[in-house]
Length: 292
Image (tube, rainbow, N blue to C red):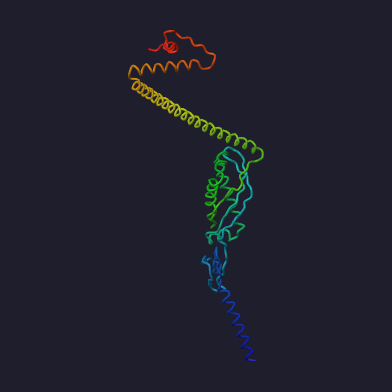
């Protein structure tokens, strides 16, 4: 009987020890905070992953995600500085960076956090867009507009221990009543820009053509000048050669004789020609055999 009682007591002790050990251990995962409370008061926040210890039955733990969260905000209407209506469709990426503030202000409830984030992003979007004209909003869409809205919203939400990493407008649209007019204006502006580029290109092309024509004219004039110089030099050389070749009276007479024959031959080309000569001309004298 005593042995049985001892076995029961041993089992109870083992179970109690297991319960104590189980309540003494907790695990911190990657990208997670674990808030440790003692009698309801926060006494520690663990963020380093691994197995941790706490006082059993006295201390309790509350895990809070530190991972990046994507939240898609419903579409909203905003008014530009020039009183034009625009529709924004935005998403937000956010995460908890201060677990104590997150617990104290929102009791670590994500739904409440998203309500605050939605309000902060809407107010930031409204403030940024209301300070700009519709044309300025369209020109700034993308990274510039994202940075402005993110910065503004982050200031409002920081008190909750939340960091807004990015508030990105994924769609920026116009109401149906003024969408067509804006599109037509944008098309007209792009056409004006294109016409300006074309005019600049044509002006540049004309400058290139004019410069090319000028260079060609200069090169042609230089070539003609060089050709004239070479021709004059050739003619002078030719005359010097003739002068050397026919430097006696007999040679000069023979040269005149050959030139006269050449002239007569050239004048008779083409057929059916009549040659009228003066009887005292050199050619007539040759034809009549009167040669001195």
